[in-house]
Each structure stands twice: as structure tokens, then as C-alpha cells.
Image 1 (spheres, rainbow, N blue to C red):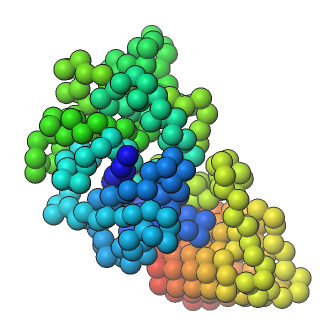
Image 2 (tube, rainbow, N blue to C red):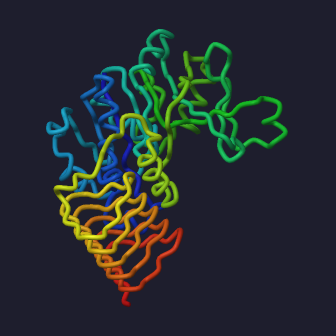
Image 3 (cartoon, rainbow, N blue to C red):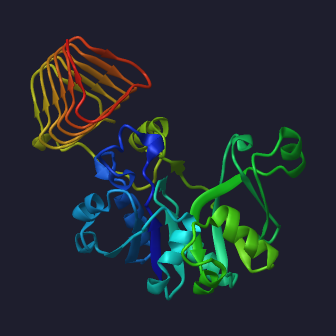
Length: 343
């Protein structure tokens, strides 16, 4: 089997964090985000991976290289212009000769891909779409299924009245298993969508188009600052299976009277001065926290300096920032790279 990760977006909803860093390698709990998806693929025995890129592709390839250090083979395709989800899949057709798992490049999940593939093969499906259940389905486009798992229809943000009638709470989770024959249904060289192009065509043709609905799995689109921060909180809270990263205190320099709770995750080469408190937060490599500073429910990206007696709550601070003494940064604040706040 093969995998295609659709990672060509510019991450505009995540700005200013993505001005310098493409979303696929924006760190989540101090690791480039794509590594979480690559690990999921490896667990399912899939090591032949194609990355479809468009925005700052060289920065992604510099980090992942050929994939060998992560136990996979990575090939890169650069879209000449944004081609849409299905268009990018069609653009990769010369490399896709087998059943392919297609992943949206902004989904954090602990989904067991091997179970998706097993069900896809058992049903002899041409295409399988993974669905996830949500608490407030009115905010999403829903996917309704038949009793046997076949896709019945797609509903764009249905009204409360329609929801009461169909009792549907499943949405597109951004993971697909596709047979090579699907490529013939996608126009070549066009911006084309899975959701609005290919999937309605599969329904029209009455193809073997099924849903996989996991009994239980974590799922989050990290595409906004709010959800990017939520992803960190969920990882630290143990909501994502198999996440076991811990702070290696031998790699950081901390002084007396420092308070660091057990949930927080701190990368190497950090310096934490006396009186500082780090609560339910993630600090990237080389962050320096000065005296009597409080960092709570926040993410501080690498090589940022937080001066003495500053307070940061429920915020995201970019790379190489300098937060002045006595600064107070409150909930919802997102600072891009290189921001300097004077005291």
C-alpha cells in the first residue's frame, strides 16, 4: 500500500504562526506535525509515502529528507498551483499504482489505519471515507450512511429540523482509502475536490463507496490557533492514545524554587530561572524563562525569551520572541515569530 498526504495549503487560518513555518511542520508538543501522521502510517505497515506540497516545500523537505530516519520512504510532489484535494491526488497519479490511503495534512488523530484498510478490503470497496462523530453536527457538513455502511448522501450544515429527522452526527474526518481506478474519474490538471467533485460522482455512479466509523478515536483539525492550542492541551491530558513524551530534566537548566507540573512538556536547552512557574504548558527548544514568570496553559515556540515577572495564560508565542518584564499576555493571544514586547 501507499499513502498520499495532502500538505499543500498555506495555513492561512493559522497565521501568524505559518508566515515562516508551513503548517505540516509546525510543532505540536515539540515535534513537526507531520511526524504524527507518519507514525500512524508506519503502525499500519505503510512506509511508501508521497507528500503533495505547494507552500514553502523546501522547509518541509529539509526536516523530513527522504524519510529514512523515520523508517519510511518519502517522495515529494510540488503542485504548480493549488489543485484541490482530488486534483492533488490526480496530480500524483504516476506514482499511485496500488491502494492508497489519502490523509489531509492538518488532522491530529489516533485512528488505527489498519482497521480502516481491513474493512475497505472486506467490503471490496472502490473508496472508503473515514467519518468521525461530533457533538454539534449543525456546524458541519454531515455524511449520512446506509445500515450496511454505504454512503447515502452528503448534507451541508443541515437545519435543526433535518437533524432531528435523520439523527446523523458523522462528518468527514479527512482520511480516505482509494483504489487506483478512482483516478480515472478525476479530470487531469484541474482544481478538483473530493467533497464537491469526486464523492458526488461516486454516488451518482452507485460505486462501492463506504464509510468507516471508528468506535472510539481522537480527531482534531489543527487548522486554527484555538485548535492548535487545544491539540497541545489534549496531548498533555492524555486524550491521544500512545502519546508518552515527557520532559527530560537532564537536558534543561533550572534554578531553585521553580515549579513545573507533571503535565508540562519542556524541550532541551531550556533555561528556567528561580521563582518561575510552568503549568500545563509546552516550551520549545532553547526557551529562556526569567525569574518569577508564570506560564500557564500556553505554548512557547523555540528560542523565545520571557523576561522576569511576566505572565502568559492560554496563549501561543512564536519563535524567537522577546516578552518584556512584567508583561501580561492573556487568553487567545497569538504572537508570530520575532515579536518584541518591551517592558
